[in-house]
Image (cartoon, rainbow, N blue to C red; front, side, top):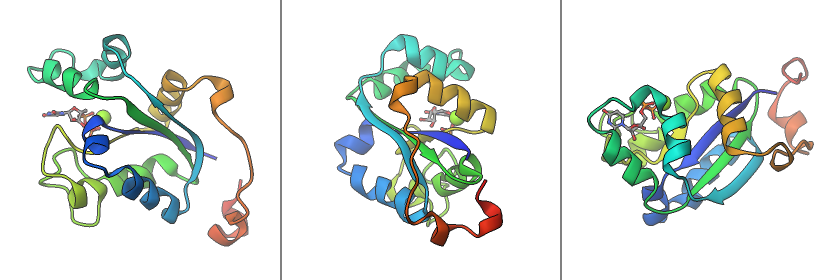
Amino acid sequence: MEKTLVILKPSTIQRGLVGQVLDRFQRKGLKIAGLKMMQLDEKILREHYAHLVDRPFFPTLLASMMATPVIVICLEGKDAVEVVRAMTGVTNSRKAAPGTIRGDFGMSGQENIVHASDSVENGMIEVKRFFADNEIFTYSLLAEPATYGPDELN
Ligand code: UDP
Ligand code: MG
């Protein structure tokens, strides 16, 4: 099944929201295929945010993402990338719809709780960027037959 990368950002750790955010993904029915805490550095962030390196806010974004360790999560499920982006909400938390993670937990464009992969292709690239092969686990969730119809399990 499809995989996507989520990062619980330093501000989420500082604000004590790790459990509540993770709980949303589990309640939705997404499977945790990988999860770990790590300290990000400039090298990995320049790669991860390559589309933003020339933007004026990039130095602030770098500092913010390195302020504490982060929690990186690989979530798995049918259409996981699209599902998780919808759960995340738009980039600016003040504009994100109530009911989304950013809409419910954030007030900032920068300190917006989570990163979530924005395409299936980037999901695969980003999971590989943050996890070694042996940190991604393949297992069956007992709840799966109750989570999906038989034709959705592939
Ligand atoms: N960001 C920011 N100001 C902006 C745009 C982005 O501080 O005007 C930060 C914000 O933390 C965002 C991250 O850079 O989550 C990556 O930006 P992107 O456009 O990829 O947004 P996302 O995919 O996270 O919604
Ligand atoms: Mg993005």
